[in-house]
Picture 1 (spheres, rainbow, N blue to C red):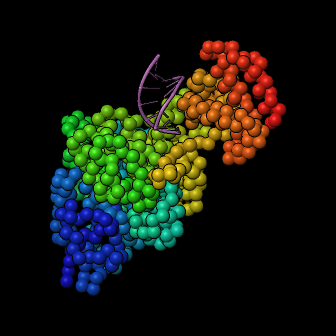
Picture 2: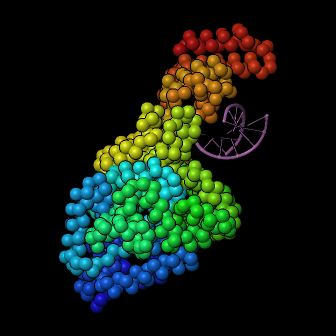
Length: 611
DNA sequence: CTTAGGG
DNA sequence: CCCTAAG
């Protein structure tokens, strides 16, 4: 019996939605599984072997897919497109990896391609078709991963640079890592490296898929690249570059795009991609989905270039992850939605509703990255886009594949904003997002480097697969820690632990400027600590005060030292207290009380004596 | 934007 | 830490 099927790598994809017939293929039996991005059209022989579909079949299916997708999008909701298309399969990932690898090292690429090709030819040579889905969209979804990268299309060449640079990394990572062969443990490590948080999921397939997705999302370029490669592999087209400009359709389009990217890593490529995508299917989706009604959105999207809204798929994925890995923590404030978000699916529904109808006010905690970011559903849907505020977009991205990025990004932005010397904000942004995903933590020292460095990204990328990931992990741990809440939710803080030095500086600053002049203090004492905002100082001071007062009363000495958990030396606390008293007394109203001069002093002395 | 305060 | 309100 011969059945033409589209092999889907994923377990949870919904064919029904797309209208594509799944056929009777069991995923398990397939050696080659399509990855999230790629579909292969194959025929299943009676013995279960997969045989590349014939050209006719391919064509048929292709059309089918395309049509369906389009329709699907319209009908179901926008997000579906990606869903239909993407599914995570091991082989796909592999392909991606290999393909991406090519960038830096053309030779390797070739080799890989050859290998793949040969592999395919075992079977049937040229007939196999790898259909590239619109997965391209996926990576781009606005919120998801790297907004900056997306932006390139518009105006910035920096982006292109970033792309180029980042490509290598990812490719390497991917190339080096064959998810298929990794053990659960390894997958867990990789997962952690990728998302900055641990997972307890034992499902290999899921892990692989997840990781692949994360990697893919992290870099648009990577995705693109791989696509090309596939084409190459299958069709052996390197020349497609030429055609790229525009006339290709379907898979070829993708190819072209990819190629163009490769050849001239510039914003151009992205643009093209966007356009294509837009023209293709996404447009519809976006429209329907987002727009609760504003034309502007559409217009803007097109005009502005591409707006990548978070795909439904992405959202689902997130939900899924959340529900599976961490305790689902959803904080919703909005009207109806909040409560029923037990299962991933349930999430989706509410979301849709919101997006299409009312203004989505709901927000949810995105724990994907490990940072609990509150992401308005709306934003996910790309509500902010209309504003044209790029920055806004930046914030959203986090949610995507790498949750941790979100916070980081935010932070980064903050930093930049506060930092006088933030050099190329724009430039940085893009690269940054990518790099941050892997190395969310920016130490002050690193800050500089990070600002414009694509290098970091690359570096990270290379290492990611290996132990390097650990480094990123560590970094992330420091800054971004996931704190389990009593409720079971995971709250993320990208906290930077206060060091003694910082505390001392703070105290000193307060003594000089007085409490309340946080911005002043920030400027004076924390000029080099870009990550500390005046608010942070204030908060810290508040805490210090509390601490100092708490221990003060009865047993000074003992407590102060004993608070093992609290590293803050007693002397400092004393000082804090002192300052607090001074301020309390001095400024406000009375100087009378008992302290002004004497009372306060004596107390202080006493304590100091102990200490 | 900077403060202040609540969560 | 984050967010929001208020000056």
